[in-house]
Image (tube, each protein chain N blue to C red):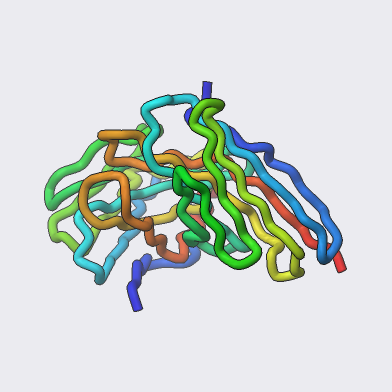
Length: 110
Length: 114
């Protein structure tokens, strides 16, 4: 089983829509969680960390469910500029490495 | 501005050639990584280094080697390039040990092996 799994999409949503992505992780020792954003032909960049209590940054909300071993990203009021691939990243306790999901592709349509 | 710089954005090589991909970071980070990214497979870790002259194999080290002689520089070497090594190669760095710390990526090196 993969360390981190994501629905690859694509998700095609109209401007203004709300969209949510989930990401599941297999190892219960996983400790830290992040969402990265990758634009076409660009490098990934950190979008936001995911905290146990959940966190929000403008139109973006990230949540962690340790019991079910998944994290989620909610994007409200989607903009054209949100079109990108969203990568789920997990760090396992004691591991000096990050585990990436394969990414979920989002296209926001005018 | 923090920066991870990869020496070449685009390379075209022939099968059997030796290929060097260089990566330099200016953030004094201890940890550096080499990933390859392929459609449908996501980012896969080739090698990482947590200190000068230290290296550890990632998930797909076969056909690759690395060198870290200085803290700021981490090189990926393909001793004898093959067509299945055609890919986007991404270098990244991160501060210290532990579970926190953002991973900073270079812009990537797109390698085509003919």
